[in-house]
Length: 138
Image (cartoon, rainbow, N blue to C red; front, side, top):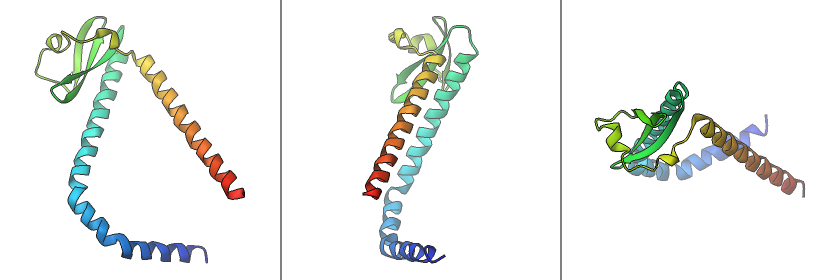
Protein backbone atom coordinates (compact mmCIF):
# COMPACT_ATOMS: atom_id res chain seq x y z
CA UNK A 1 0.00 0.00 0.00
CA UNK A 2 2.86 2.38 0.66
CA UNK A 3 3.88 2.22 -3.02
CA UNK A 4 0.48 3.55 -4.14
CA UNK A 5 0.61 6.76 -2.12
CA UNK A 6 3.77 8.26 -3.71
CA UNK A 7 2.49 7.49 -7.21
CA UNK A 8 -0.86 9.07 -6.40
CA UNK A 9 0.85 12.06 -4.87
CA UNK A 10 3.05 12.41 -7.97
CA UNK A 11 -0.02 12.24 -10.22
CA UNK A 12 -1.69 15.00 -8.25
CA UNK A 13 1.45 17.15 -8.41
CA UNK A 14 1.68 16.65 -12.18
CA UNK A 15 -2.03 17.43 -12.63
CA UNK A 16 -1.69 20.65 -10.64
CA UNK A 17 1.48 21.64 -12.47
CA UNK A 18 0.45 20.78 -16.04
CA UNK A 19 -3.36 20.82 -15.86
CA UNK A 20 -3.80 24.43 -17.00
CA UNK A 21 -1.45 23.89 -19.97
CA UNK A 22 -3.34 20.77 -21.00
CA UNK A 23 -6.66 22.61 -20.74
CA UNK A 24 -5.41 25.41 -23.01
CA UNK A 25 -3.99 22.90 -25.51
CA UNK A 26 -7.30 20.98 -25.56
CA UNK A 27 -9.27 24.19 -26.06
CA UNK A 28 -7.03 25.12 -29.01
CA UNK A 29 -6.63 21.77 -30.77
CA UNK A 30 -8.98 19.29 -29.15
CA UNK A 31 -11.87 19.72 -31.57
CA UNK A 32 -9.62 19.42 -34.62
CA UNK A 33 -7.98 16.31 -33.15
CA UNK A 34 -11.39 14.79 -32.47
CA UNK A 35 -12.48 15.46 -36.06
CA UNK A 36 -9.30 13.90 -37.43
CA UNK A 37 -9.87 10.77 -35.34
CA UNK A 38 -13.43 10.52 -36.68
CA UNK A 39 -12.15 10.82 -40.25
CA UNK A 40 -9.50 8.14 -39.68
CA UNK A 41 -12.06 5.77 -38.15
CA UNK A 42 -14.43 6.31 -41.08
CA UNK A 43 -11.62 5.58 -43.56
CA UNK A 44 -10.69 2.39 -41.70
CA UNK A 45 -14.33 1.28 -41.60
CA UNK A 46 -14.72 1.89 -45.35
CA UNK A 47 -11.57 -0.12 -46.06
CA UNK A 48 -12.82 -3.00 -43.91
CA UNK A 49 -16.23 -2.96 -45.64
CA UNK A 50 -14.56 -3.03 -49.07
CA UNK A 51 -12.41 -6.05 -48.22
CA UNK A 52 -15.37 -7.80 -46.57
CA UNK A 53 -17.39 -7.28 -49.76
CA UNK A 54 -14.49 -8.52 -51.93
CA UNK A 55 -14.33 -11.73 -49.86
CA UNK A 56 -17.91 -12.52 -50.86
CA UNK A 57 -17.26 -12.16 -54.61
CA UNK A 58 -15.71 -14.52 -57.12
CA UNK A 59 -12.24 -13.15 -57.93
CA UNK A 60 -12.86 -10.14 -55.65
CA UNK A 61 -10.22 -7.43 -55.42
CA UNK A 62 -10.01 -3.91 -54.01
CA UNK A 63 -8.41 -0.78 -55.46
CA UNK A 64 -7.69 2.43 -53.57
CA UNK A 65 -8.64 5.51 -55.58
CA UNK A 66 -8.82 9.22 -54.88
CA UNK A 67 -11.85 11.28 -55.80
CA UNK A 68 -10.74 14.82 -55.11
CA UNK A 69 -9.29 14.52 -51.62
CA UNK A 70 -11.51 11.62 -50.57
CA UNK A 71 -10.16 8.06 -50.47
CA UNK A 72 -12.49 5.64 -52.25
CA UNK A 73 -12.12 1.85 -52.02
CA UNK A 74 -13.43 0.30 -55.25
CA UNK A 75 -14.41 -3.38 -55.16
CA UNK A 76 -13.98 -5.46 -58.33
CA UNK A 77 -15.16 -8.86 -59.39
CA UNK A 78 -12.78 -9.87 -62.14
CA UNK A 79 -12.23 -6.68 -64.14
CA UNK A 80 -15.66 -5.20 -63.40
CA UNK A 81 -16.06 -2.56 -60.63
CA UNK A 82 -19.12 -3.43 -58.55
CA UNK A 83 -19.11 -1.23 -55.43
CA UNK A 84 -17.31 1.62 -53.71
CA UNK A 85 -16.83 2.50 -50.07
CA UNK A 86 -17.88 5.14 -49.21
CA UNK A 87 -20.61 5.08 -51.86
CA UNK A 88 -20.22 7.85 -54.44
CA UNK A 89 -22.50 9.45 -57.03
CA UNK A 90 -19.91 9.17 -59.81
CA UNK A 91 -19.98 6.17 -62.15
CA UNK A 92 -17.45 3.53 -61.02
CA UNK A 93 -16.20 2.91 -64.56
CA UNK A 94 -15.43 6.63 -64.86
CA UNK A 95 -13.64 6.64 -61.50
CA UNK A 96 -11.30 3.79 -62.46
CA UNK A 97 -10.95 4.73 -66.15
CA UNK A 98 -7.27 5.79 -65.83
CA UNK A 99 -6.44 3.72 -62.74
CA UNK A 100 -3.54 1.32 -62.52
CA UNK A 101 -5.58 -1.88 -62.22
CA UNK A 102 -2.49 -3.95 -61.44
CA UNK A 103 -2.50 -2.24 -58.02
CA UNK A 104 -5.65 -4.09 -56.97
CA UNK A 105 -5.28 -6.15 -53.80
CA UNK A 106 -6.97 -9.44 -53.02
CA UNK A 107 -8.39 -9.94 -49.52
CA UNK A 108 -5.87 -12.74 -48.96
CA UNK A 109 -2.92 -10.47 -49.81
CA UNK A 110 -4.35 -7.80 -47.54
CA UNK A 111 -4.69 -10.28 -44.66
CA UNK A 112 -1.09 -11.46 -45.18
CA UNK A 113 0.25 -7.89 -45.16
CA UNK A 114 -1.71 -7.11 -41.97
CA UNK A 115 -0.39 -10.26 -40.26
CA UNK A 116 3.17 -9.40 -41.32
CA UNK A 117 2.84 -5.83 -39.98
CA UNK A 118 1.31 -7.14 -36.72
CA UNK A 119 4.19 -9.60 -36.27
CA UNK A 120 6.73 -6.85 -36.95
CA UNK A 121 5.12 -4.58 -34.32
CA UNK A 122 5.08 -7.44 -31.81
CA UNK A 123 8.76 -8.17 -32.46
CA UNK A 124 9.66 -4.50 -32.06
CA UNK A 125 7.68 -4.33 -28.83
CA UNK A 126 9.31 -7.50 -27.50
CA UNK A 127 12.75 -6.20 -28.48
CA UNK A 128 12.27 -2.88 -26.73
CA UNK A 129 10.90 -4.65 -23.64
CA UNK A 130 13.95 -6.90 -23.57
CA UNK A 131 16.27 -3.90 -23.86
CA UNK A 132 14.53 -2.20 -20.93
CA UNK A 133 14.82 -5.35 -18.88
CA UNK A 134 18.56 -5.57 -19.62
CA UNK A 135 19.04 -1.89 -18.76
CA UNK A 136 17.26 -2.32 -15.42
CA UNK A 137 19.39 -5.28 -14.47
CA UNK A 138 22.63 -3.33 -15.11
